[in-house]
View 1 (cartoon, rainbow, N blue to C red):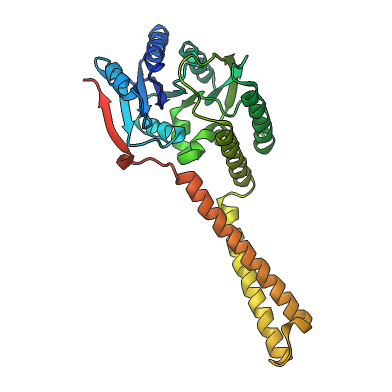
View 2: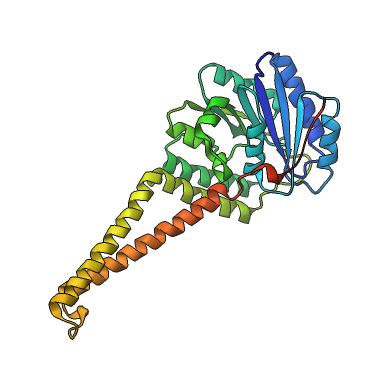
Length: 316
């Protein structure tokens, strides 16, 4: 059996008017490219007729797999399930709103064939509302400063990865959106390719301004923290807070023993120092615990398992 070359993953949420044409364009592009492929649609709990349309596409097309999630978990979760199912050497992800042209898939594949490990599209002549474009510029500038990756479009919905990069990074949850960032940090070759952007003809964007703003804020906090405080450093931060707590309690005990119970610890330097150190240690420990809880929620909050999948359809 020949090795499958390309897997195209398409997250879908309420795109009933776009997915038939999208599949037609994907199929035409890959047939012309003359490489073996599969197309994986992940229906992320759509409430319109997307499920019915996808069932029709799947029927009679042996190169199509449709995964129906139980409810809407978000784009990152849909991509994660697609990654788990994909078998190709090259993994392409593309949004289902037809604002990216599937005919450009070979452009990304060729970039990987020439040595890149990850290729991401930079939208040129972007046809979105000015408020969205302005916000995106600020967001991308901040992330570029934080990460050091010279990207102009961190929020691109059209990318291509070598499968071994995904296997190596093994990211899940919301961190999937930052695969190029973590790949760059691990020494993989990451490139950005400028390609034309198209206006949305049918449907509406799933991200309003408030959602974009909150998501961007969380993104910057998480990426900044992970670039400055990795898991090992967070471990040492926790250990340091416990050591400080031990020192603070020891100093307070010595102050009590040296000055006697009748004298307030606030009237001698040992007592004041002990209180300050103890307070700082407790503050640090609380911050560390809060970060751990938030990171788990951000990292694993949308992690997908078999129980989140309602159905997987594939034509025989």
